[in-house]
Length: 100
Image (cartoon, rainbow, N blue to C red):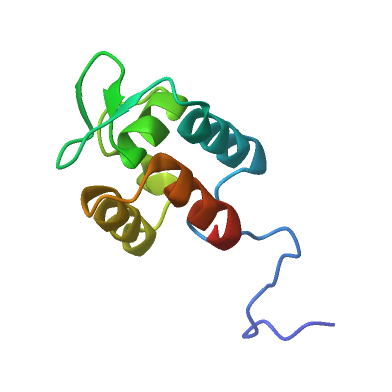
């Protein structure tokens, strides 16, 4: 019998910012396909012009900055800094694939 003061643990529990694998794979595909112009300092500046986080927003099909339910603020900031410092979409995709 469990103690009422002990926390209940769930095997299925995921981290607060867990990105579904299918979403991650789609983001990686879009980053690597080369159909978008990479921009700095903004999520998007018009048709087919996005930063790496703007492409996540595009994949999710949501309003600006609504991607934080699948990406921690720390990781979002790091990806933004990679994008704005000149890392290519392919380099950013490699980091995402290895770390998220």
